[in-house]
Each structure stands twice: as structure tokens, then as C-alpha cells.
Image 1 (tube, helix red, strand yellow):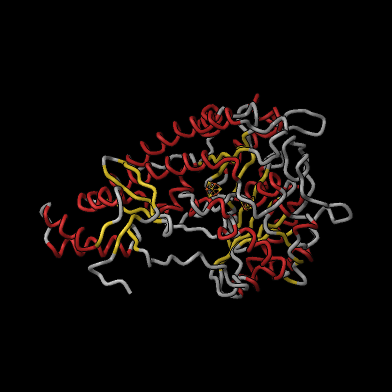
Image 2 (cartoon, helix red, strand yellow):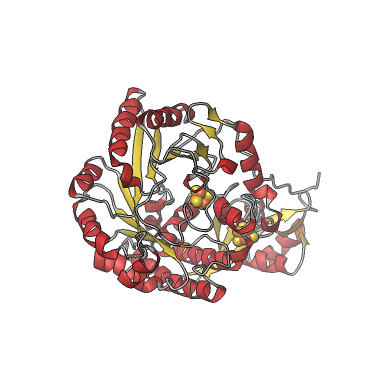
Length: 482
Ligand code: SF4
Ligand code: SF4
């Protein structure tokens, strides 16, 4: 074992950044942010030019005015935080989750039918992975009840669990949604547990009665919507090609005005020609009144007409930077901004997230289709290739383990030297499948973009932690919008 005195130190793995005139490190093996004081900065600068032994570093610090004890304590702290490491430092790879990892969330695809024909839809479009032929189009009550029972039995001792209703268009099976809420709540109460609900909808079928039900039952709502009329109507169309904006606009307004119990979120899919992030944000936030807006570039093969090219993605990033700047101004005043792409990342940073997998798919979350077949998440529902069993027979542990092993960061060699991996972990499994034909492939087509965006969020995190640290506490419990 190396003695303390002769220990040879070098720099650990981190990404450094400055914010609010302070210096920070994002410690990659820990997924944690570390603020540097003057002495630590000096030491990092010293080690940037090469390795050094413990005693020499102490002497150098003492020569610059630090006491021996302070210098020794600093070295100890930096070593234990892995800011500096030695030749015999062993960083454990992130472990695989246990085989019986308890479920937290179930995404129930109440139907695989939709009344819109959005060109880019991952469920029906050119990149679809679903094979719904011969399977039920609508979930029935028996399967829905079996799904709830499955969630409760597979979530072990978790005090609270979550159901997200999804489609197709979720509200095409609204009577079933109502029955599931009643049944699941009763079952959860009988076990002394709580259950929370949310749904995603295209908003075309919202009625005052449905809105009242959602509000009374404290059900979170995300509306899939792409912006003002000219952008919404480009690809979010009915089967006859007619745009959907005129239909949904009054319904969205009614939803926001009358749903009293939860904030209402819009989820925007960015596509070629629908990349005007600032205009979309302004319309959804200020003209319609959504509380939060999240943006995601379309998941597709690069040769589709609606896929966004590199220049388009650069333009998106530039506009993200502008909204991120607004987010920071709001945060420093103690106000919430509605750009959820920042809020979600800040939440992950304050929670010290260090992902073995990019998301909860197949882990704490599974999707269930109208037939009761299980899938890693809603995007794989009804796909024979990705089935993970059925709610009546249980999870196929072998398939689940194969999915999770392939999707684990340890299997993504390209990511092992990337400082953004605690948050990215290779990116969405579904996107990886569409792009590379393998759910376990790292999404290497957007790494620079991801690192730039992560760096932006780190700057915001650093600035808020320096100037208004209490504000960050608001994100300690937040779960990312799926
Ligand atoms: S996919 Fe790219 S950005 Fe993400 S962790 Fe891997 S190398 Fe980093
Ligand atoms: S990130 Fe991708 S794989 Fe994960 S839940 Fe979302 S769509 Fe599914």
C-alpha cells in the first residue's frame, strides 16, 4: 500500500467550469458539483502540469501561506472526493441494478389508436417499432386491472407509485382511464400506499367534463403540441391532412383555465422547419398560458425529410441558450421559468444523479400495451421484438436483464471517456434503436450538442448555487417529465 508521504497524485476525472466568478468542478465518477476555493484551485493548477507527491504538494501550499494542517486536510478532502487520485485509486464501475429492482411507474397505453396522423409519430410513422397486427386496439378493464395489480405487486415497499396514461391518443379510451383511477386508488389505499396519475394527450378530445375529472382527481397533464398554427399544422395533422391547431386551441385554453390542481405542460417535438424554439416558447407560455414547456428533437433516422440536420440542431442550441439565460435571470429573482429542459437538468444535478442507464425504461418504469404485453417504455409498446412479458405472467427477467445489460453505461465504451455520462448515459434506448438498430448503442450523433447543453446547465447551477442557493431546493424532489 502507498504510504501517505510518497503518494503520487494526479488529477481525477472532472469537467471544470466557472460561474458567478467562482470556480467549479463537475466530478464525473460521482456526478457531483464541487466548488473550488483558492487553495484547491492552486492545487489543481499545479497538478495540471503533471503528477506530484503528497509531501511536495504540502510544502508548496505551506510556502504559499497555508498551515500544514490546512494543506493536509485539503489534500485529504480532494482525494476522498476523487478530484485528485493516485495510481492505486480504484473507481468501482456503476453496478447493475438487482434483478428484482422494484417498479415505480407504469405507462399504460390505453389504446394504440390515434385520431391524428402526425407525420413523425414513432408509433405509426416510418420509424415505428410497434407490430400491433392482430393485437387489441383498446385495452379492456380486465387487462387494466391486471396492470394495476402488477404495478402494486412489483413495486415492493415503495410508499408511492405512479401511473402515466398514454396512447395512441389516450382520451380515445377515457372511460377506461376513469375506471383505472378509481380501481388503482382503492387498491393503493387498501395497502396504505399512494398512487399518482398523469396523462399525455393531443388535446383534440378534451371536454369540460374530462377537464373537470382530471382536475378533481389531481391528474397531471402533458399536451403534445408544436406551437403556433403555422408550426402545429405542419405535421400534427388529421388523416385528411387538415391541421389540428384550430381544434385544440380552445380546448387547451379551457384546460389551463379550469385544471386547478396541477401545472399543465406542453411537450414540443422539434422537426425540420419546426425549430423556432423562441417563437414556440413564447406562444405556448405567454399566449396560451402553459406552465412548463419541454422541447425534444424528433427521434428518427437521419434521412427522413423531417429530421433536423446539424445546422438546424445548432440553431436549436442557440435558442436554448437564450431561454437558459432567461431561466437564470428568473432563478436569481426566485421565480420559476417554464423552460423545463433546464429545470429537469438542474433537478438531476441537485439530486446528484449518476446514471447507469439513460432513463428508467425497463428498470423503475415499464410500459404496458392494450394486450397487457410489457415493454421497456411506452415507445416500445406493442413491439414483439422488445416485449418484456405480460402483466398476467410477469416480467420476463431474462429479456429484461438483456435489455438492461446492453443499455448499461458499462457496455457503452464510447461513453467511458465522456464527462457528460452521469447525466446522458448514452441517451434514449428508443432513439438508439431507430438510429443504430440496437437499444444499447450510444447515441453518438449528438455528443457535442449534449455536452454543450450540459455545460450550459452546469453554469446555471453554479451561478444559482452561488447567488440564490435556496432556490435549488425547489428541485430536490422534482422528477423529470418523461
Ligand atoms: S452518448 Fe455521447 S454525450 Fe452521451 S455519454 Fe455517450 S459519449 Fe457522452
Ligand atoms: S428516454 Fe427513450 S427509452 Fe427512456 S423512457 Fe424516454 S422514450 Fe423510453
